[in-house]
Length: 486
Image (tube, rainbow, N blue to C red; front, side, top):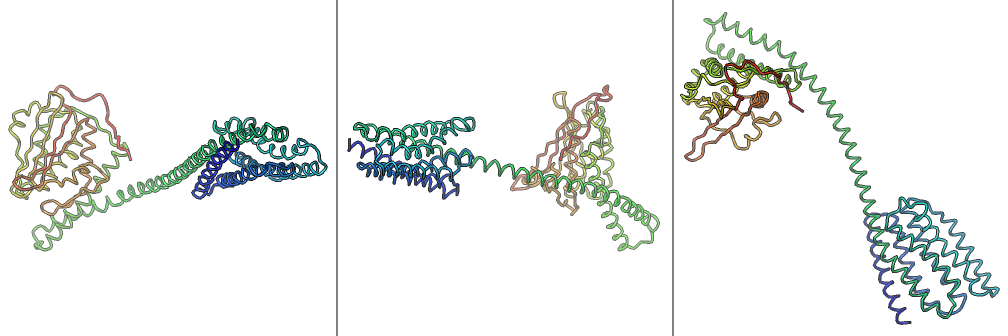
């Protein structure tokens, strides 16, 4: 029996020291009070085992040393109340413990039998697990986890064990079952308390992270609100600025044109050159304002597009003709593919003619001219695809578009503006606006480009895929409105 008791004592001591180490580590990591309470509990439990092993004879010694069990039981109860967010009245329990010790001392002094002498201290020890078990299993049953409820049952068994001490400790056979029962209960605690500690750690960490997420979410909402207010203010300022700039720029353009007409024959080359630069710069500013206005109109849904069946060959011819002077000045040729001329009677598509000419076709032709070298040719073709689409292709043999720029070519937020072959500047708004219009038409725009390298020829090819129509279809039954989102 002594060997069995020694083995059991050794096992529970090792478990207790391991749990002590675990809770010290958790307390060091989190500074959570629970782990401090449990670390002291396991330390007190080891001391209690040593004292219980020493108390093998002498009524007073057995009773007083058993009374040390008040310390680990009080700590165990405190950990229970802490996890359940309930307050434990330390003063009340301290008073109960002192009263138990006082009564037992009186009974021992007057030589009462063991049961009567031990009962006050046994009750003082039992009251801690009893109140904790009642709190778990009765008052906080819904809030308690499954692990906590198991702990409540173990605490209830500790109450019975404490009372058994008073009634059966001095029985000859008590040593046979008393020590194994006590150690078995502590081993159950040694198994369940680490799990409860880790569960509490997990729940606390989850709550901390949830709180952090809520705080970050609140901060983001506040930031978004401020950004929305700032964005709205910027929109208003932009509209005011565009409106206030348009009139002066228009006046400058008309006055410079007027000066050219009035003083055409009397201007020397230097003055004429400076006036030309003023006119070009002002015209560019006006173009930027027009494109920004158009983008804002599309974005706000103020621009409506009525799709009609349009003969593409006619508008392609007209648009190419409008670039005649620019093409001659830069010695660039636009070549119409024979297929385009051959199929010209069948080339119809659903588009809105004005926006297609001014904002799509003109933009793409202007870009092709801008990035072409003098003496080069721009190839223009159109053809049908499976009787469902009509395609228009515009191919120039300039320097090509850098690979890293191609991905953001149609994105308003990406910087894609670059100088042309003659040093012309751009706004970077043209192609994104082209793409939006093509999407409004229910079509698609594709780009293929290659920079010069080795024996390969540099080029840029834009392909427009538009919904095909025929001469008998006058207009579509629906109106297409802006769908740009911030």
